[in-house]
Image 1 (tube, one colour):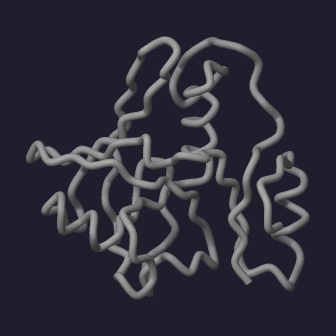
Image 2 (tube, one colour; image 1 turned 120 degrees about the vertical axis):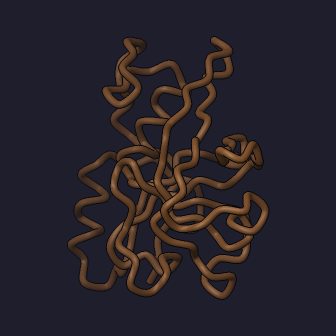
Image 3 (cartoon, one colour; image 1 turned 180 degrees about the vertical axis):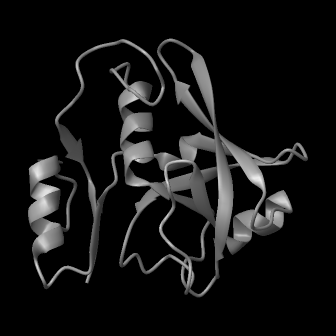
Length: 162
């Protein structure tokens, strides 16, 4: 897709089974850089948040896709935060209408080199990305432990790599 579209989970599964597709993940945040990542040393910055998985070209060689409590950060983020593999950082997810903030602890499992991804960003587990987006919109989220509006079945925006 060359434009923003909304698709349900079944669409993503069909794409993942297509041998012509190397990687596909939802990208529900139009302005993902509204999310902040904070290091225990007090340094923080806004970052793009992308779902990762098998076949993701942004992953460093030899690094597995992040589990629900893990992240891979870009080299620019690691430099600004003075972060290294093994550090635990917090992703601050904001629910703007209610003015709530939920911190999520993530262990850095890899640093994506500049050649793979040259901007400020973090890769997270797809489930975490979708749940953060759902919660941010005031929806139910098992990960964030809240009640809210019904869960959305379609996820807008798609990141596809050949």
